[in-house]
Length: 313
Image 1: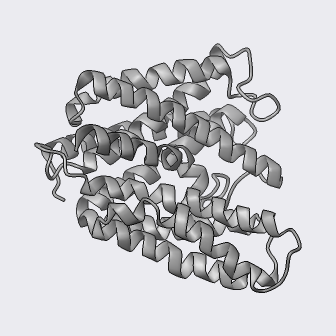
Image 2 (image 1 turned 30 degrees about the horizontal axis):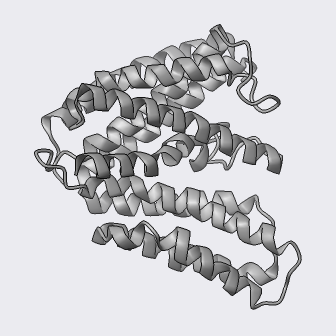
Image 3 (image 1 turned 60 degrees about the vertical axis):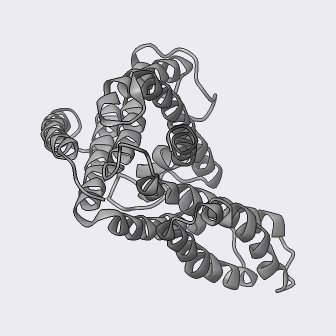
């Protein structure tokens, strides 16, 4: 994978926008929320921190190439899986299943992605890991809450490892005429999902009347979801110059990944609510963990990957 003029332009533009957005956030925080008492300002700053993290990841990918991005996301998956499973019910009988999840299944999935063995990494977790992990647990003979324990581990692997691994997998897609530019696919996915998330929040505050999921998140409304999904299509179309999809294809993919990203954030928020926590982890004080920062992108990544693979390779 090589960097491109488009990547350089995007990097400079992103850096400038992030610096301006951060300055605005610091001014708002110092005047309106010096003690963190203003939820809208704190939500804005949380998103700014997310964007800096995304920019850092993509910058490292541009410097170290495909292998570097795969290793980076493997480490992120490890940290995210740890966050996820730390909130789940586990017993001594699950010890070897957890060891297998962290130190066998996770690295094997990313090695398969590195090998570009699509036929195996596309089924390794949802088929082989899905069937094998319950066997490891059941052999210990502890059936107390067995289904819940096994299902939570499988859910963690699907979200944090399987779905997450499809982000670096984008770099190996053989798109004719797009060689050496696949990192732009990752940037397209991240930008559309993150900007749609902001639009959902803003539109929900301005136009929102009906909650998208009653009792879960009052700032997530049907009106905000509709506006943000349309905005995803517009953003996708605006970024068509950096993709092989064309104007219509970029708009369609923008609509899809925006909707999936928003729903992914809602699903993972429901899991947090079920577990009685506000954040998945404590990557940065007051700003949650890895899953909080990447939930929408990770949720949308497998569908985006397969749409691109079957539509443009």
